Image 1 (cartoon, one colour):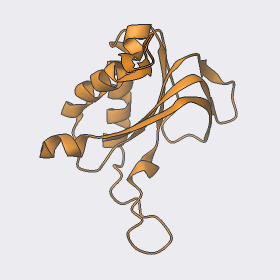
Image 2 (cartoon, one colour; image 1 turned 135 degrees about the horizontal axis):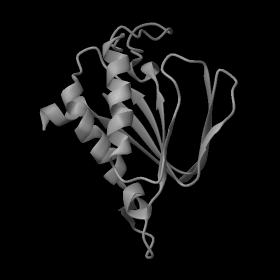
Image 3 (spheres, helix red, strand yellow; image 1 turned 90 degrees about the horizontal axis):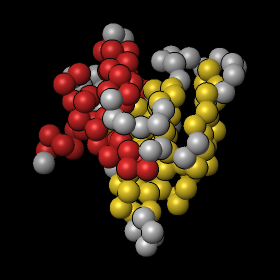
Amino acid sequence: MRAVIQAVSCASVRVNGGEPRCIGPGLVILLGVRDTDTLAIVPRLAEKCAGLRIFPDQEGKLNLSARDLGYSALVVSQFTLYGDTHKGMRPSFIRAAKPPLSVDAYELFLTEMEKQGLKQIQHGEFGADMQLSLVNEGPCTIVMDTDEWKQA
C-alpha cells in the first residue's frame, strides 16, 4: 500500500458535488492499494500514519504526531498512486488493486484509523468523483510504501 500523508491546518473533500467533509488541523492521507497487498498490513499502516511525528513541538522540531495533539484525519482513496509512468506519456494503472481487495483494504484502513485516538476521521468514498482542498503546513508531505517495509 502507498500512503501520501500531509500535515494540514485544514482540509475538506466533496464527494459527487455534495457538502464538504472537513477537518481542522491534522492529516490528509491519500491511500493507494496495490494488487499484491494483503489486509494484514493495514493495522500497522494506520498506526504509523496516526503516530507519524510530523508536527512541530515548542522548539520547532518535528516531534509530535496527530495522535499526540488530538488532531483529525481526512482519508481519500487514490488508485493513481500506483500509476506506472515507465513507458509513454499515459500512466498505466495495472498494479493498482481492483475490487474487492481495494475496497476491503480502504474500508479496513478507515476502521483502523478510528482506533488510533484521533479527534475525528473524515473520508471520501471509494470510486466516487471527489474534489479535495487542503492547506499543507510546513509544507510537510511524507510518502509511505509498505513494500519498502518488506525489504527492510
